[in-house]
Picture 1 (cartoon, rainbow over the protein chains, first blue to last red):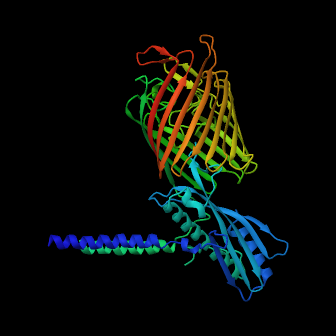
Picture 2: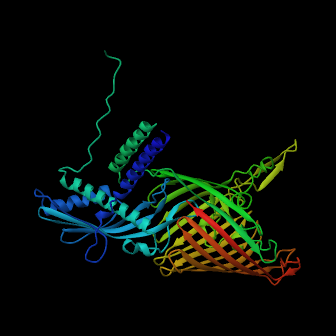
Picture 3: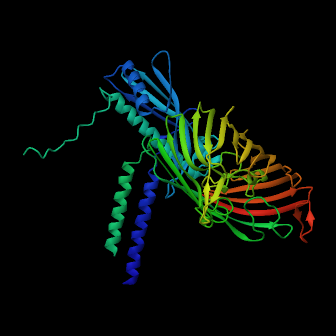
Length: 201
Length: 359
C-alpha cells in the first residue's frame, strides 16, 4: 500500500516537473532568426490591401509617438521609411525578479502601397549595476551584442534575454498592427461612470 | 492525498497557461516593489599576525567574519519613488552607520539605515530627492557589490559615508547633468546635530543646521567614460573637492581614478589619489590593482603623514556570487604599523578572501 502510494506521488511530481519544463521551453526566442548579416532579427511583412503608403506612414509615426514615446525616431525624405532606436529592461528568471540590464535595439518601419514591413535588430545587452543610492543603472561602456552573448554571459542568461527580446518585438509588432488597422487611432474615451441617485424613486 | 496532488497539478497547469497569456513585457506603467541587496563574509590573514591596516571593513584578523546583510526596497509609481536600505552586521552597522540620531538618549539605538529617501521626477530631466543618502563624494562605497576591491582605500575611510539633505538634479543630456543640494551640518548623521545645550534639568538637547552645500557635475565625454566632479562645503564639516571617474577603454580593460582634497572644519584634512586599472581575463575572472597615495595633513598637534597602498584583487564570478581573493601591501615611513612582535614598522601586508552575493 505504502509503495504504491509513493509510486503515485512520484508520478505526480514528475508531471509537475514536466509541466514546468514545458512552460520554460515555450520560449519566444524562436521569433528571432538570423538575418543575412548573422544578426538576430524580428522581421514581418504585413499586407494591408485597403491602406495607402502615406496612410500607413502617418499611422506608424502616430504609433511611435503614442505607444513608444521614448523611442528615437528618424524619418526619411521620401516618407516611406521610419527608423530609430530604443531599449527595454530585461529581468532575471529568479523567484524575485531582478533587473539584470537593458537591451538596446534599432528598428525600421517601411510602407508601400497596400503593405508595410518592419524589423527590429542590433539587440545589444548592457548589464545593470546597483549604484550607491540603490538605483539600477547601466554599467558604463559595457555593450554585449546578443549574437556574441555567450562570450560574456551564460547560455541560460542569453536564452532568457533572447526570449524577452522576442516577446518585446512581438508586442511591438502586434501594437503596430493595431494602430495600422484602426480607422481612428485616438484612444477611446472612458464611458462616464453611472451614478445612482437615491433621491428620486 | 493523491487527488489533492492531482488538483495541484491542474492548478499549476492553469496558472502556467494563464501566465503565458499575459507573457508580455511592460513598456509603460509602474514598476513593482523591488527587493535588492547583498550578503558578504570574509577571512583575513595579516602577515604581522594581528590586525594592522586601519582601513575600513575586513577588520578581523584570522577569523571567518561577517560583513553584512544589506536589504533594500525600492518602488516607483509614476513620477514618485522611494528607496529604503537597511544593513545588519559589522559592515552595515557600527562600521558605516551612526548610532541613533545624535541624541545621547538614543546613543545605542541604531537605525540600521544606509539609504532612506524619496524622489520625484518633476520632468524627464529634472529630479528632486530628499532624505538620508549615500554620499555623492568618492569612488568606493559601503556595499561590497559596488566595489571591486574588498578592503577599502584610505580615501574612502577619510571621506563621508552618508549625507542627509535635499538635492535637485538636472540632466542637460545623457552626457551632462548637474546636482546641487543642501545637506545637514555633519556627515554620517541621521540628524543635524552641530549645536547642543543643557537645560535646567540637566538634559542635553541637540540642535543643528541644514547648512552644507553640495554639488556634482557629471560629464560623459566619450562612450564608456564618466566623470563626476564633486564639491561639498559646510561651516561645520569643511570643504571637499573630489574627482571620481571611470573609463571602460576596451571590452576587457577599465580604468578608474579618484582624487580628493579636504580642508577646514570637521573630520581630519587630507589629500590623496587612487588609480584602479582592471582587466577581464576571462568571462568569469577579472584582475585589478588599486594603487593609492594618501596624506593626512598636519594639525596643531600632529605632523602630516603619508600612506601608500598597493592592492591586487581578483573577482571570480559565478552568477550572483563573487569570490574576492586579495593581497595588499601598505607603506608609511612614519611607522604607524607594527610587526609580529608589535614593534613599529613602515610596512604592513594582508591577504583577504571574501565572498559576496548580490541580489
